[in-house]
Image 1 (cartoon, rainbow, N blue to C red):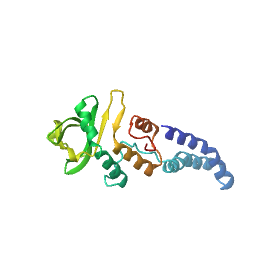
Image 2 (spheres, one colour):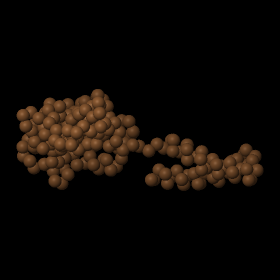
Image 3 (cartoon, helix red, strand yellow):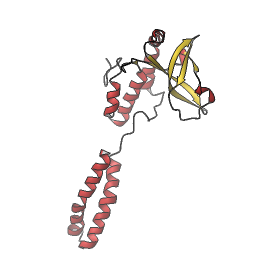
Image 4 (cartoon, helix red, strand yellow):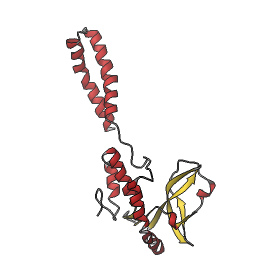
Length: 202
């Protein structure tokens, strides 16, 4: 909204200097100069400004390559601490979530689900994410995901305090690498994660 408002104001204010330029420097008469100035102010100026001032996408919707070295590093870090997920599920005091690969419509996607309990080496999960591909019928029930396939995990207290979630940190680092900085609301969201400090890891 701020982006559109700012571009609109600049476009409006640009009419007068453009008008002076095309009449005084380019030698157009007043009427034709006014038409040209209006056209440039309401079409050319906004087009240039919007192209230069590209709005950043939401970090929650940009795709991330799972083979990106940053993502691979933090997924490995999370998997090394899988015992914390197991302990959290056994305590039953925190909401538990896991990230895992699953095939949707012929494509493997990396999605989040609510973890309920562990049985015989499998995490019993309900899907939380909205995959891009078609949803197979079995995802409407509970899924059995092998423990070794879990890529990330989170344990969340009732106040929102979150443990784990290293792939989310990796996602933030990749986003800042590509776009320069995170939106402020997403930075506030990262404050609930206690295993790392944004932007620096403890």
